[in-house]
Length: 102
Image (tube, rainbow, N blue to C red; front, top):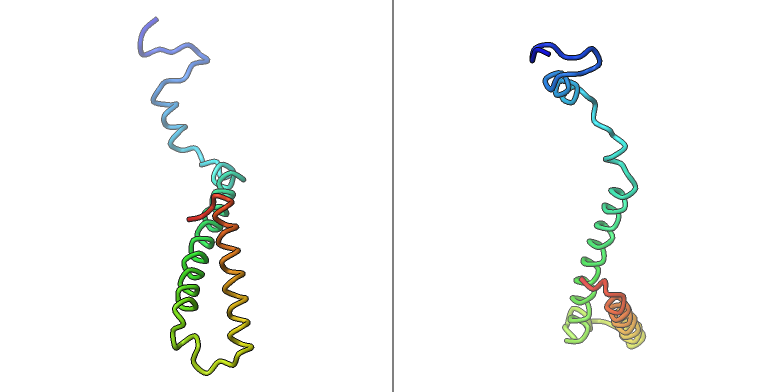
């Protein structure tokens, strides 16, 4: 058999490559649940990281009794902030216990 002649049911590498180049990409692979889950998981992790940073900054202000926190606040407001501080601390501890602490 000559190199330039292929059997009737065969395809050359050049023809196969042309098919591959011209083939449409499979959209379903890009939108698979695994990819969406990864994006959702990344978004969730980003939110957790931002929440943790913000919560830690709030606690720092509350614990240092900075004027922006205590200025012109009545005792009930300060007690409410104390309760909020306790809940933020509990939430941070719970996050740490899940192993999701960023």
